[in-house]
Structure formats: C-alpha cells, structure tokens
Image (cartoon, rainbow, N blue to C red):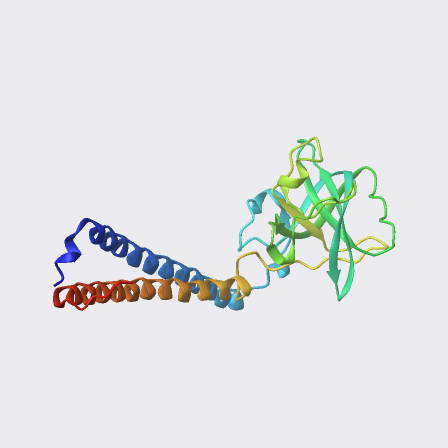
Length: 250
C-alpha cells in the first residue's frame, strides 16, 4: 500500500521533509543559544564592576569597543571641528537633541564627542577653540534599530539620524573612529548624556525575540512532520478506495 513512497513525486517530498526538519531544529537550537548567551551576559553584568567607576585611560587602549569596554571612561585630545545635532533624543522624558562635535587629533582622525543634550528650541553652544582634552564614557557606534534609533531621512543640513562612523564619513572629509564618547561634564546650556548599556546584551526585547524565534522554528519542524503524515495517510486512503472501486468523480 505504501509503495507510492518510492515514486519520483514522493521521493522529492520525502527529501524535502528530511532536509526541512533538521534545518528547523538547527535554527531553533541556534536561536535558543543566542538567548542563553544573552542571559549569561546579563548575569555576568550583575557581578562585573561598573565600568564608569574605573579610572579613565587613553582612548586607543580600549578600541575596538566591545561589551567589556563599553561605558569605560577614556581621555582623548585634539581640536574641535565640525558640529552636528542628533535630534529626537529624550532625557528624563523630555525631547531634545545630542550636540555632537568632532574632536580631530594630530593624526587627522576624528572622535565623535557628545558634549551634551540640548533641549528643544535652544541653540547649541559653540565648541571651545584650540587644543582640548575630554574625558567621557566610551560607546560603540549606533546601528539602525538599536536603542530605538532609526536611520530616518530628509534631515536638515547639520543634523544626523544616528551616531556612526558610516554616516559621519558621508559628511566630513576625514577618517572617523568607529566609536563615540559622551563627556562626563557638559558645558553650560547642555546636560550630560549618561552612558548607554552595550548593544546586544542583557535581557532586552531582542533577547525575548530570540526565545520567540526558538519556539517558531520548533513549531515549523513539527508542522512539516505533521503535514507529511497527513499527506501519506491521504494518499494511502485514495489508493485503497481506488482498489475497492469506491473512488467517486470530483
């Protein structure tokens, strides 16, 4: 009765099922591993000392930025040049903008420095002239969708949607560090921006999305197996009815 399983059509169906189920299980296991990794990083962060409490060190010693170095206090020297506003940033429930100024070092490379948060309707203060040394919290470049940041478009000249080396390279004629710093002490007229938690760490919405995807992939695997069983049973019943002469015209 089940000889139809070795026909060319069913061999193709069987091959698809044999490939689809392990693939779904693999993807579900991978998503579960990502969730478990986030849980481990969340637990580790609880026992790790606050990065902001450690002494400031030169910027170069903590690059590239990772979950261990994000939030650490660094020092950098140079001259302030181009300045931008990063709108749609909230602080204590109020809407405003980050004042982002490029600190260009002697080697020509520039560090994006958030000198503070500016309330709506106010004018950003000009950066100081000459050589300066800043101290602040190190942050990784933002990515689309991280911490509620969206790329957006159509912003006026002098404004940026997010703080990233990729976006800055389109508006400044020099190399930019793939990181930024928010200063500890903001100048008059601005408020200091607190350091944000490292991206892709902790039990945030993305972590529980990984857990949800885990369930979805395992459901897909079960669905493929269930549908294969239903199709086999239906084919067997059709062949049996044909053998007994019970099949009726559609």
